[in-house]
Amino acid sequence: MSLIEFRKVSKRFGPQVVLDRIDLRVERGQNLVIIGASGSGKSVMLKHMVGLLRPDSGQVLFEGRRIDNLSERRLAPVRAQFGFLFQMGALFDSMTVEENVAFPLVEHTNKKRDEIAVIVDEKLRMVGLPEVRKKMPAELSGGQRKRVALARAIALDPRVILYDEPTTGLDPIRADVINELILKLQRELRVTSVVVTHDMHSAFKIGDRIVMLHDAHLVFDGTPQQTRESDDPIVRRFVTGEAGDEELAALRDPVH
Amino acid sequence: MPLKMVEKIGGSAIEVLAQFGDFCIFVWRTITWFFAGVVSRRSWRLLPPQLYEIGVRSVPVVAITGGFIGMVMAVETYSQFAAIGQANRLGTIINLSVVKQIGPVLAAVMVAGRVGGALAAELGTMHVTEQLDALRVMGSDPIPYLVVPRFVACVALTPILTAYSDVLGIFGGWLIAVPFFGIPNGIYWYYSIHGGVDTWQIMEGITKAFLFGGAIALISCYKGFTSGAGASGVGRACTESFVAAFIAIIIINFVFAEASKDMYNAIYGLRSVFG
Image 1 (cartoon, chains in turn cyan, brown):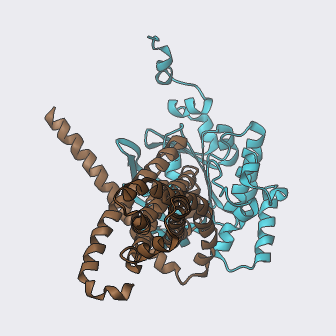
Image 2: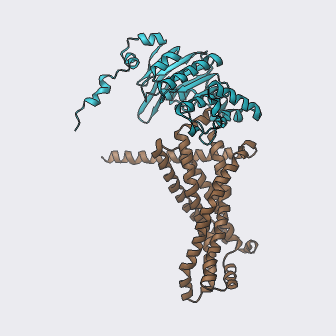
Image 3: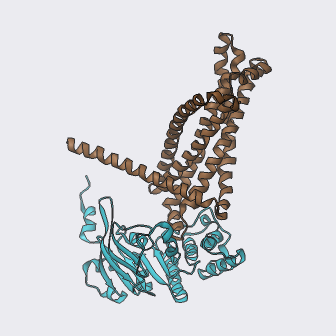
């Protein structure tokens, strides 16, 4: 039984079809990377995995159990098994770093304050930021914010971590720190990871399986090696970062 | 062409109805979570910051507007009453207007502007920066965590702010009528109480403030939760929240006035009970 499964999942926003009868299985311990152009629906796919979005048709299953039709209340125990790193971190800006990381522990466990403090400290050390615990999110850099968000995402020792564009907006060195951090968490926590990105360097580094979303369909599914060697023109252009005639057509239009 | 027009009108009507249905579900979920949270210590823990933000920090603005409106009423009405030799009865009209209409409505409008706008902006920003999704992913429903404490604070404190506005309005009216226009103090208060303000009217103003507070909180939180993307989306949510809350206050005020009058007439024989 797969850990996460999509069965003919479709989703549209207004007239725009974002996912069209998507089938996907994510196995335990796998590091799946979903690539695709900006706005292609990668984040939408990720949000379906934790019930933040519901499909218009099709089913989403977690450990063989359908979750897309569960109420918010019944989804809570399922979501507790997930950690989610949002694109901009989504730290609560009215709380300190420490309070942010402690939030899931305060809300969902009966641990005492000093026990929580020990876990917060441990998680912040894991992401290499033990010194920022008293700071507010607004005082952190983009990379620090993502690492704190990651510390919060792993606070409850989740079985699956979902990463939404973890390296977007970071310089190459800080992006690589995040990549290394993802690999470190995979090694140390033995979690299943699903990473949405359009950063191919990151995809090759952290993924052991890569799927590509294009025009609401999964057009490619393979290992990083197969991705590199693919002769599918859509995959090739994405991997090499070359704009096609379609993308360049707008630039060639005469200016009136 | 006519078909397209019908299609457009129909589309807009469906959209408005769908939004209203969505709002009703939001209200229902808030109320069910409110009753579920009464027994939870965690819910009570979330309340004090909201009581401070919504109640304590609204006191200056409500006090200033309440006090000045009482003063303005005295200034504007004195010459009319003096012309017909009824200046001594100025307290009746000022105090009755303040406790029945001006105090509650003005306090509610101030709360809608100050608190409603802030709630829509805060929750709207949380929505566009995915903080609401982060809460949901961590298994915390944003309704009990964010909406219920704000709803309770608004419902509990709008009547208190109204009472505060009433007191300041009455004081403002007195300040102009008695020391400045020279109406005898005892006569001013005598006419205010006899044939003027009674307990029923004070309670009418305070009671509708509960409804105003509830409407302001629910509308503002809903607008925040459904705000559009980016700074413009949050800005629009704030504006819409104030406009919708203001319209709700006016409509509730009208319906309540009618209902209250009918009830007063129905129990007229028992009026002595209410002072």
